[in-house]
Image 1 (cartoon, rainbow, N blue to C red):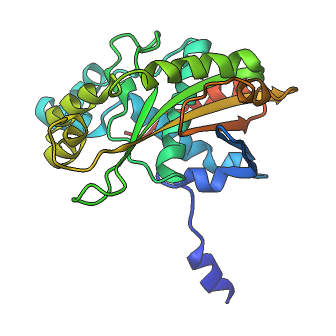
Image 2: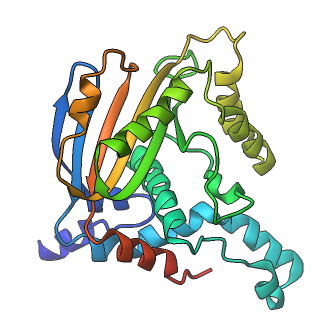
Length: 271
């Protein structure tokens, strides 16, 4: 029995580390939005550090492109081909960490597909990119059922207060006021460049206003990461008269944010 149990143990990797790391402490159904309080599972950090660091690296580098370059130019030119694009500035790392964890949570926990890691295409890794932080898709069936786009905004701070939530909500409101997310065409073009035509076609169906498919739904997600939480900023948002539809707020409490994120970004990754 002990051997059987050991064989059934699933170790954390890049595709499932959220399940080994994040626990939902509570869920509140406000009239205008949903609110989730998240925390780390006890003893999980040491187990997920390596796959999380690898996942962070993947957001900045295309392993397939690197492999192709090595094949074309020869292994001896590795130093010339490979350049670590992970940022060095603390604030940039924190902001990007929020985006990366948000996309992972959406994929591994909520069932969305995030087709493009946009940080790979940032011409200046030390500066943040404009546009939506993360866009996730649920493509549904061919007839168009359960077609959903989720636009997410992330924020990482040591202390969590009302200003953080307000900043994130203002970012969500900008996307809400548009006919479609600004990054949709960007995602489609990058998929075409990568030769992923099937996925590009699915994304393009959200851009085609003349399609006979049924309309898709929009959902909005705010993902906040902080070390300390002394107040309840969601109450301020709840008191506003006009709140966008389909909004969910996730608060992830993470201790020792600065050294933890720094260690993740500094880890050496096997190529």
